Image (cartoon, rainbow, N blue to C red; front, side, top):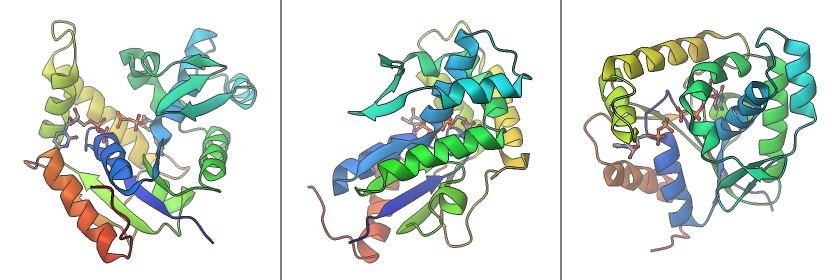
Length: 223
Ligand code: CDP
Ligand code: CDP
């Protein structure tokens, strides 16, 4: 029997990881945060002080890293790095690391291995187009850039450190790099369901997605 993959792609702050986690819990699937994999590799590069132009060293260290998910936490070489990978320094560097085709191959392999023996919900940028082109169902989430920036700003614990304008600028820059890179850019798959989450609550978005999942034939809901 094959296993199902549900793909959720879209730009930063669209709400992918929030709804992916909730959806996975409702249908008993395992959640894979593909962005966290790129973030963990980026953390390693920064920790080792590797120049981001030193592609060979980056690839070498990524290949020799042990990255694993357990209970929705991410481990890098045995250490729980779930919080460290959210540092702002990672936000501004990760898209450069994610441009490297060999790094993308490593991350694709990790995701396919996890999905080889269980049903998964995966969020990212290239899930429906590259990682799981035959996904059971594909979603593409968007929201206006103003709303996405505000969502991210509201998450900040220390709002004095960054302005809303600064966060918005970072998001626009990261989206631009992600959508314009050569290797599997951020793109809506032809068969993906587009959901504009601007002005919608998290529950509304999850309900909408559950409806489509149900219509596709997954009737195994955890109430
Ligand atoms: O949560 P947020 O949207 O801020 O980012 P993320 O999902 O953690 O992804 C961080 C970065 O990793 C993105 O901006 C992309 O550069 C890269 N990424 C990617 O290239 N492909 C994916 N499938 C997931 C993330
Ligand atoms: O993964 P992605 O970058 O697409 O977004 P996220 O990390 O899930 O962050 C989205 C933020 O917006 C979270 O703080 C959510 O609580 C909030 N939010 C949402 O996800 N969906 C809505 N419809 C409204 C708000």
